[in-house]
Image (tube, rainbow, N blue to C red; front, side):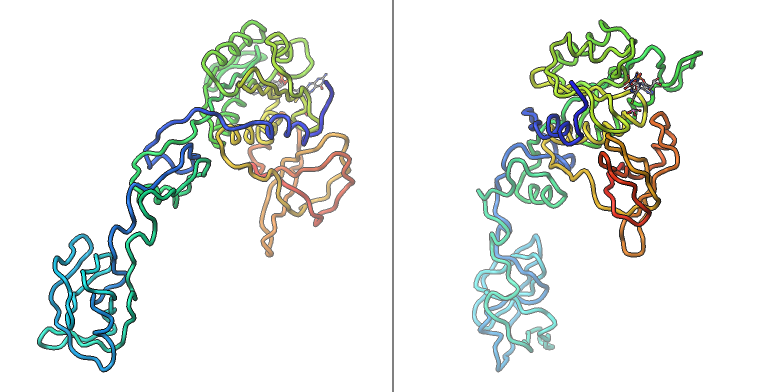
Length: 403
Ligand SMILES: Nc1nc2c(c(=O)[nH]1)N[C@H]1C(S)=C(S)[C@@H](COP(=O)(O)OP(=O)(O)OC[C@H]3O[C@@H](n4cnc5c(N)ncnc54)[C@H](O)[C@@H]3O)O[C@H]1N2
Ligand code: MOO
């Protein structure tokens, strides 16, 4: 299978993915940012009573019309403590915001529009219309009404609405389970003693953080040596444990010890693609076994992170039921760039805002895919399409956000 364009690879892996079917009930405090799996129907009416919208006096609107006459103040209605009686002609009840409107009243006169007389009675100084400053029962929503539909991304506002509708828990789409396996005889965990010709396995930490930011749960499979049986064993376990995605790092290229392609082949993975026309990240593989997606990321640190940003993050968002995000946004080049070759180039770049609010993206001077210090210093990737001509500072470009 040959090198395929980034867009084709994305449609084979990401656009084809649908949300996982597992659901989970979470307390409201953990619900923001999750995706609803079921409609939320109000168990109560809000407000459950006609309520005052202002501090003032509940009365019959016809009693606060010119010529103004004093009214007897017969009690008080506060939020949480309703006035028990009924208002008759010539009467008013002191009322506060959120308090139930007493029976017989049809309006609230704000306190700024009335004066209290020495004997305790009330003299309106402005007229009020029927219904004014009253929030009728059910004006927000009524019991039985669908407040939120399945598939909704729960924002802080929608969590508050669910709470108001009487729901302490919400059923949401479960987090996709993503197994992450680093491969390579040379790898040791961070903090361990690093022997001659060994290096620290760093990529899995970056990839795991990216998966979690995209709404997934990471199952850290650690480090496997360059042995087909070991890698296949991890793959089989991921399948048996019902993982939604199995991600390998390294061993994706063509060297004698690059075994991921062989393991995929022997495990009868339905291959989506094996190489993508991009730099960095060309040796990127993807496929599926049943419902489990497989992503073979390249081993070079910047390559694995760029490939994960462009493919794994969007895939996990899809599996989690989260809305797609546009991958690129417009920016302005902060430096000249040369003409590009046949692979889309994703240049590690810093970004700043100019006076007009546009993003100015400046490629870092070193772009080697082994350089984590450069990757970590980058804010965005400047995306250069295949065969793009040379472009000068100030020209429009597209960038991919890294945060
Ligand atoms: N003859 C060819 N050689 C290579 C090609 C090619 O097309 N023909 N492609 C190159 C490109 S591009 C890349 S990218 C790399 C990717 O190769 P692999 O995915 O097989 O990665 P490895 O060989 O296993 O490792 C590459 C490099 O990255 C280090 N590494 C691996 N895993 C980790 C990790 N978890 N954390 C940190 N660093 C890691 C590894 O030690 C190597 O230095 O292949 C080129 N070769
Ligand atoms: O594509 Mo590799 O990722 O160029 O180093």
